[in-house]
Length: 273
Image (cartoon, rainbow, N blue to C red; front, top):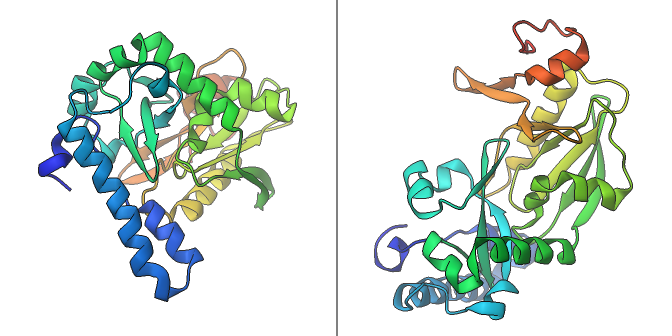
């Protein structure tokens, strides 16, 4: 949606909350629920448009409401990200920015908001502390074609952000990843899934994770990423898949191919799907 209050830095209108709530309530209650959620979202957007700085909070009051949030590439044009969110971090190529949570709406923090939070370092430190303090969502073990995956779901859009802190996530579960590391997926902001590749990993295992990611994303109003990511201690998060001819295919990082010893038909640092 564009125009009016939806042109300012970080203004965001989404309907994933409405979709989730609709599944929990009888149809007779949908009208009141939609009105309440949309009113909250509009109030936040209009307030941000009218308030200099676009937030309505500053200092500690702002920092205690921050959280790190991924941005789906199609939800924010690269030009807007580069111009208004130069502080953004990238995890496996996926942009991670800061957001302010207000009831059912979230406002993205633009560069000119950071001074209100005490500069970038203070803002990031507060957002990360809030993420860790909130903990993780509901856990469920999923097995697909022999690949055991732990899926974590929450009603808050911070859940996927844990992929930016894999060491902290592994510490939470008492997991010590081996040299073959961990495969991740973030099908939606409210989800994160991972599988620990302790003994072996193959393009088939990555493909199973990729297929599970697609299944999880298909019922989401605002999916996050179709890719599978790979990480091991001491190394950055990397994509283990890539776009090719309009489809997402297995494309293992060169480091992973070396660890595999060239198996799975790898060629020129790339695992053939």
